[in-house]
Length: 331
Image 1 (cartoon, one colour):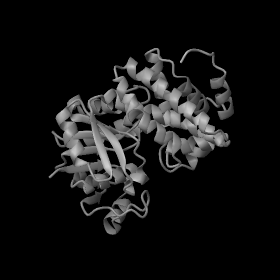
Image 2 (cartoon, rainbow, N blue to C red):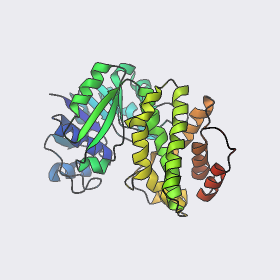
Image 3 (cartoon, rainbow, N blue to C red):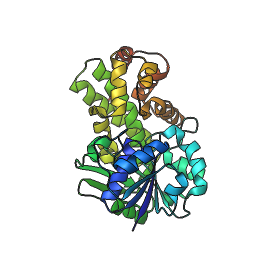
Image 4 (tube, rainbow, N blue to C red):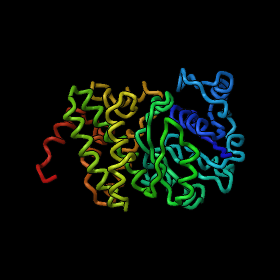
């Protein structure tokens, strides 16, 4: 029997704990706040992040990371990207030595421009074959409600990827495997930035043509960056590329799209942050994505525009004018 520790009881971590349990995996769900862990245990529900969703009996909650990690075959990381290094440094002494480390995190580390799997290897000393990532069009609430969805598990060790696939395959959640860790992680990180732009366009009152244009050109700059880093171009045509990008740019359940929409309607970044409970990864990661692209000489105009709005005071309306005013060229 597979045992998993899910580190974070936010909406996606709790949802994935449910998926694992529904697939027959025993799950220890770590909640930072003891009162939340106690509430989940007593009510079989995470009322803070997934109200109305009953959690399977295979899920047990704890506020003690050592208890959560004891005997785990799979350690699932589902925390904000910019907190991964600090938290994982504290958790590393508690990690079972042979456990698979699975990242659900979609971001690029500020300063180092490392992907999340690279941060995991750097902090824990684990080899790349022990680290996997999960990415795809995975809006937490829909999956928690058991609406059909697919995802990608990427790992350089194909046997480890297959074991993870079996551990989370349910009648409503279909995982595929892919050895392209670089492509899957970049697709997940950059789509958050493009979704911010799509949300801004929505907030400005623009329609489907604008959103489709942003999705398509956003996919182009994601693919350019991926190719420069050695990713498989086919990855960006799949679930971890186009699939995730479409869902995140289109759904009102998307944190990044919703964040961008409020900016498009005239709110400041500080105002939206103050009123947002959960992390919109693209707001911080847009800077690290841009730094990564510049380091490899890759043109990412949408990402550049999002950075200007989120961190340099440019308005969403000015962003659109600048993108549309760029020099005409071949696709």
